Image (cartoon, rainbow, N blue to C red; front, side):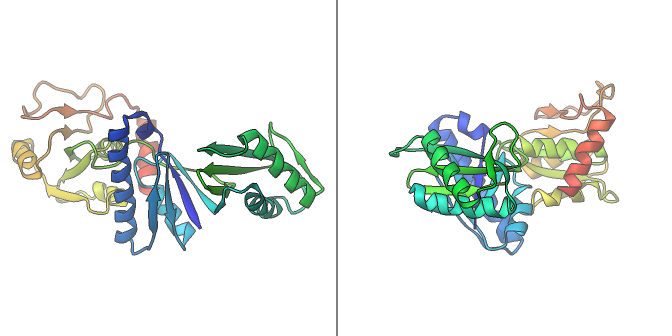
Length: 285
């Protein structure tokens, strides 16, 4: 089985930057799988990353925690020949609609082929109806959607689209030191990770709030922090280029320590309900 991985924001960059970010994302995927003792083979083109795995549930759980992934789909891979694609589409339709029902073919292509996406969808739709006479086409609100992506000389057939965390690949946007001593601090550190920062956590010895972040960074570094007095030294030790604070609205004070690096407050505009929602996602993704 291959997991078809999509990245959104990366595709808006220049070709050179996009290639750098994509390679960082591939490295992060490989790093996560290695840390969790799972095997995978990865390859990539200009628009997708392909992750070949044996254990799809475990791999899917891991990819849901890799920043930079917008979504992914467990897919069957075949050639770009409509006949081969149709074989997999019929099998998938039979699995999703064993007693018939409404369906839609969602086809898209990248590359040059002797057919259009619409032509392919029509051919596959007829194949499904020939195999399952009780199946009807409904492009508006079908009971089952069968997705097909043809990329150059390969075809991918799938039904599920799993949401990823989005953002930018972690480690692509520099280093930051995050003070995590509260729920807002946890969320702020996570939001910095999502924007591509490689975060080092500074936390009181007695606090375990930051432990949830290890699900998102298997090599998370944690430094002991007891007071603002030693903050500049922690910035130096961690080689950080910014500091992330879990400050809430109304808590920003001119008495905060003066540092040689920028200070960011990602959670300052979030209310309590949103902080709680993100905290639950961080712990249970």
